[in-house]
Length: 232
Image 1 (cartoon, helix red, strand yellow):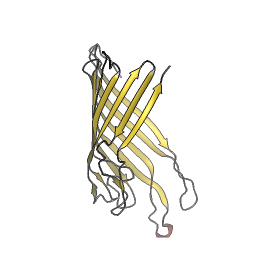
Image 2: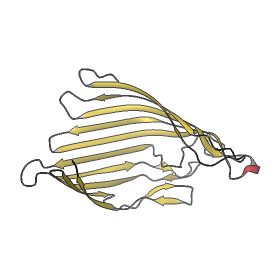
Image 3: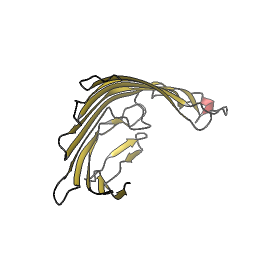
Image 4: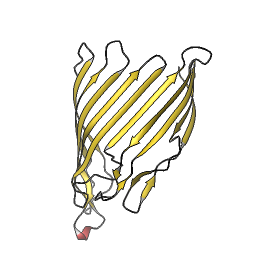
């Protein structure tokens, strides 16, 4: 990363990682870890003396040694490590501190996730092992009183959008997109912070993802959690 005097900071990043795989192949050999490489380049901008910033990044992640079905008819229900998956896309983020009381954050991700090597109908398709919508966005705003008798009392609200995603290995079925609303009420006094958080505030019913054309999973309904935190 290079930080210029005007607050502009271009950067590049490269990383490698691995995920262990449980189980063995048909011959009893333990599976090797799935390995990944990530390339990322972007730019961040935060004006001098400001708590607000914007950033943009492009990325590409490639996974190798991905488990995929064994096509040998004598090895039914077995897997081999000949698969490969690739994810590339764009991420945008904006953080705005409009005053001592009001803060906002907005994010957007556009991603293209593909299985680039496989032994079945999923080759060249978007994987469904985890929801992989092409478009994801979120927005959050928080307002906290800094003066007066209610000093320390704050409110926050926002939304999360997830676009449609494939629900079958051949991508012939699409799971509809959805938008969820969240909210929080919090109060800070001395070292204490009391808060009540609510996710999916409207208790919207939606499909989070599918395993195939006949097996889908509903997303979480309304969830309300109260907390008390003491910091020292």
